[in-house]
Amino acid sequence: MTVSSWTTRYQGAVMNTFGTPQGVLVRGEGAYVWDADGTRYLDLLGGIAVNALGHAHPAIIEAVTAQLATLGHVSNFFASEPQVELAEKLLALLGHDGRVFFTSSGTEANEAAFKATRRTGRTRIVAAEGSFHGRTMGALALTSKEAYRAPFEPLPGDVSWVPYGDVEALEAAVDDTVAAVLLEPIQGEAGVVGPPDGYLQAARDITTRHGALLWIDEVQTGMGRTGAWFAHTESGVVPDLMTLAKGLGGGIPIGACVATGDAATLLEPGNHGTTFGGNPVATAAGLAVIATIESDGLLGSVLEVGDVFRAGLADHPLVVDVTGRGLLVGIVLDRPVAAEVQKAALAAGLILNNATPERLRLAPPLILTVEQASDAVRTIRRLLDEVPA
Ligand SMILES: *Cc1c(COP(=O)(O)O)cnc(C)c1O
Image (cartoon, rainbow, N blue to C red; front, side, top):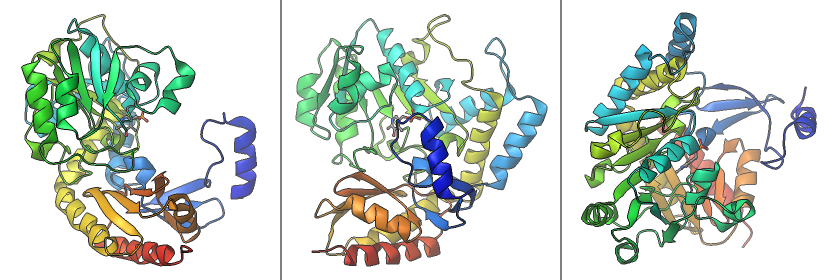
């Protein structure tokens, strides 16, 4: 079966929410994937920041296989060992006491946090323009993009958006009626947009002053992607709520809502639930991802390999800026050709993403090597050279 015949079958059977797929992948190993025609690609997108350890990593295979052979699923009437261990581990990485609610995706992690904010007795949420927080009705209500929300109104209300990175705007928007301020430490779907230095600290000050929660969405930026366990770590702030997913399971679906301090007890018995969240197999995968990032020194390597992209692309005449940190890389172009470059890259054996018309996004596996990154930089530069003037 070829890519083309699978694509035809896909279009006859799978709901058309994503448009025509760019290909049909059949196999992966390390930072590479292969399509149904046997073509190999270097995966610079990692399933959108998900495949932290690349494809078919032995640590994940082993952990998932062993757990599935031991105990694959229990209801939430029971606890399981990997669930407790992963919750403890995430709190240890955050460096604070708290409690974790496990989910199966990022949107559900945000849904849980959203419900927790309602338990403060306040309803107003202040989020940022350009933000993306997911597609369930609750998470969608928090997402700034009008085109995503409009067809599904009415959504849960009382959400407003302020320009991202603008401390004065945040200051003006937050008062004693606000339940929470919700921010990504780097906006991923917006094309890897970071705030100015000091923004998260200011957000922490403002929320503390008004008795509001600070909720940081680390679904895309967390779990080592920026060279730290969490992208907000270097700011020194402690969020009341932090949401995780994507890289956490290295490809096994899992998300988490991590709450610290008083926020940890906002959700009480009966307030929330999920059948699959915190499943033993998914949490075992999470533990394997964390253990491998630690044992292989990937946080340091992420910074080193990220610098290959930054140093290698910044001086190209079409490149205005290279944004992000570690292996969350935004390539800002001086013209709206990101879609063309993405297509040309795919034809040249590179998977990357055109997040906006002017911005390419890279979120490769954290195991990407300097050599693979250098090869990719050479290819991307050549493709940029070939963009018609
Ligand atoms: C991807 C993403 C989500 C949604 O996660 P899903 O697993 O797709 O539901 C939420 N927030 C951010 C910042 C994301 O990047």
